[in-house]
Length: 266
Image (cartoon, rainbow, N blue to C red; front, side, top):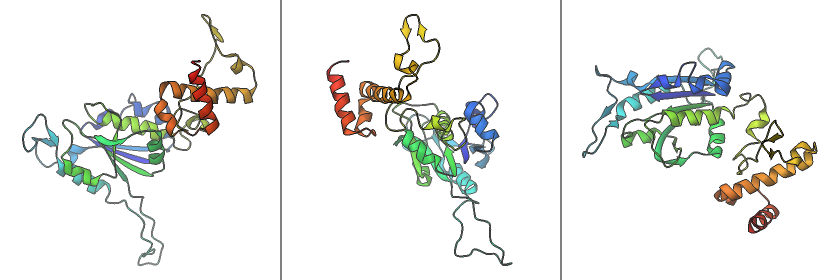
């Protein structure tokens, strides 16, 4: 997968100490699983101050990101991308034309965007090429959103800039790419994959200051362990995120069981 970022602070994405240069993402990049290219929006300005913002029409607080640099940048970054041309598969020499790279999916971040979740991460992970446009200040001139394929919101809070939001999305998407994780099951057996929170987990020591690991996890009986984990996942979701249960992948019998469980106050 190729991901390009467009920002007035591209340096936050770069460097060995960047979150995108270490751990799972760092390994994915070194293995060629993820190609990350960071662009400075100022490279598409034409004044001596490399201006990317201006006062809003009608007055108001703060500055708005200008429309022209964003359009010019996206025009250039998408120039060589697009679907192949099946109606003209050969060139003048009769040789087959190499297919064009897939058209990139352009992503903006804004409070009115669709709430980002694991389902959205899985959808983006199926793409071959993403361009993430990161705003600052009071946001973008409204006209930039005509170029958006998706507009994403991480939640009902305000960030100084969208770079952090983009990094969160890149992290969530990258770990879903084939080969990014050492254990491919890790991206399947975790919170939100089936609409539920993940079950409690434990490691050594088995007894820490009187807090003991549940006996079932020490039993070696994997059928019982799987059953316990499933039950705990449903219980934790019902207790902490009951809103998730409406669309979670659980059976009617499990819904009846967890309702009875909660009624007993266990």
